[in-house]
Amino acid sequence: MIFNELRIRNVVIQPAQILAPMAGITDTVFRRFIRRLGGCGLIMTEFVSSEGMLRQNLKSRRFLYYTEEERPITAQIFGAEADRLAEAARMIEDLGFDIIDLNLGCPAKKVVKCGGSGLLRELPLLETIFRKIRSAVAIPFTCKIRIGWSDEEIVAVPVARLAEDCGVEAIAIHGRTRLQGYSGRARWDVIAEVGNAVRIPVIGNGDVFTPEAAEALHRQTGCDAVMIGRAAPTNPWIFRQMQEYFRTGVYSQPSDADRYGLIRTYYEMLVGEDIPGSIGKMKQFAGWFTHGVRNGSELRRQVQSATTPLQVLERVNRFFCDCNHPADDTACGALRNGSEGQLASICESPARLVDVRIC
Image 1 (cartoon, rainbow, N blue to C red):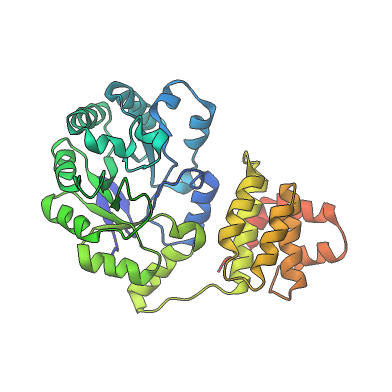
Image 2 (image 1 turned 60 degrees about the vertical axis):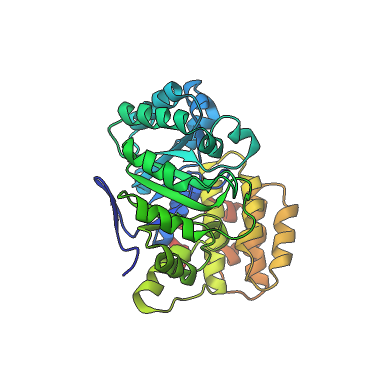
């Protein structure tokens, strides 16, 4: 079966299906949410600034919070000063992460100024950074890159060879250039070229939104693992669907009951853990999770107009109860009886997070 297992030294990634780091998305709640759905072998933190870490920035500390349930887990850092990155890498190791990853792929202007894909144009500096981080930590060290700055500056192969020579142990490649952003098509042919040029594991990324696309990526590139980014928030089942498809040739689609369980479970996790900005995350994810739900535009409207996290949960439960979608009997009963206190207790109970049916 393809993408069955990947080993990065002593870290076993099974299946070889990886959740990409995504700013504003892959916090601890979302990572555990994906882990519980099944099929994801490795998760990664949001990228963290090495400077923010060394200054003990509160946001950086929050990004690096994780639980044992999330293992194996990679922490991704970015920056452009070799000594500062090495010091931040030591902090990552001290925090107990399984792998450290260097971001060489972010196309955002504010990141390119101090690292990210901007380093793809400064290979001598990049070599120094690779060597400094490698000498600073004993845990596995990986990196994630874009194929280059522009179509005229495709550097994936030389960067991968440089990384391998410096002791980097795996490389993930997003098949777009920095100037492409997320437009156009990912160039899987460049990922294949890298796979033929180095001995370290190559992880393919870009334009994988379905199990069929993951299979095509493997067929065309021979990559050792697949990394899923933007598809995960819109279809959190994709990791399990890939496993099912690779094993049987078919995969199941989520029902309305599955979607209700998914939405409610994620929202309950946000409420239960008092995540900063949880109302904003609820509204953000409503735009993704509700596509495919009957009359989903109405649910999105209701969520967007809510003013508190509990109000969002109440509206989600009411929507599925009123629209005759399969929903949780206890929550529906609380709503029908007008018992906001009972609904609040349901939302705050940790046991409910396990009871809700996701699939």
